[in-house]
Image (tube, rainbow over all chains, first blue to last red; front, side):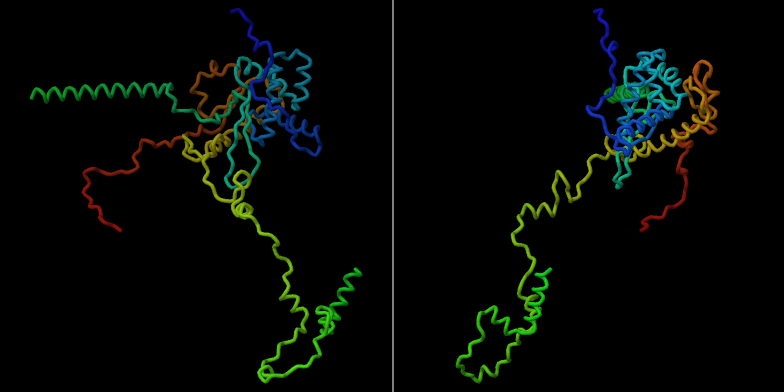
Length: 184
Length: 200
């Protein structure tokens, strides 16, 4: 089957895009919303991990993903992409980061480029839900702890083998003692 | 306003002249008929005259009272709230779990507060160091943050090739305490101390 992979020909984000945008109520209206999103997209590329209100983080995520995927598809010689990067990134040293650091990092990714977690709430406080937005492959310690309970992890495999060996030893001992009893 | 003034004048008149009020209500004055005075009746204590019109209004007429019976559904809803909308009774929460790593409780589909706090503190420190190091120069390399003493462990040139290494001034925080293998209770099996028994 020498079919071209359609998924590589078409650009598609690997996140769920909401059917309608969030207004992010602002005194400045839609322009204020865009300014706020620009600030957060810029901060995401700068710090790689942010704690934000859930709605803002969810909205920012889409724009950041789109920008990275466009950069991967077209490269830095494509004029519209560069204009888009220039609009969305306010600190211009981060444009270098987008094309020289993030594009090689995410080039072979089969998953989304960002992750969104729900941050914990302090119990009796009634607050807006918070969330943690991060770029994948960042240099910080992992947010989700490494799982130690999966069967195929090397230490679990070794422990299983050790259990089997121990049981075999015990069974041998028991059979030996039974035979001795019979002889007596 | 005019009506109020008229009402007030009527009330004043009634207070002063009760006979006029009786005439107005009953349509006639008490009958000037022939009457016999029995000795028993004369001994009766005389009925206090209803001269105080304010007392009459206050005691005998109810002003604002419920006109209709409130239905059982409405009463129950006021008492307990609505289960889908605003329920007033306390319900047990079923979305709390125990973290496998640290044992603190966390809400379902949320991060564990204890684990997240640890990561967050580290992350903010990393971010400060990275921001200070990179400044306003164009960022062209991946950044790796190493703790103190980690640089010598790895073969740096191969492992971090083409990456920018930033070193922290402190050692890596260990999640375990260092004296895990040390015994917490030190006691000999052949000790001859007599333990007190049946202590309340």
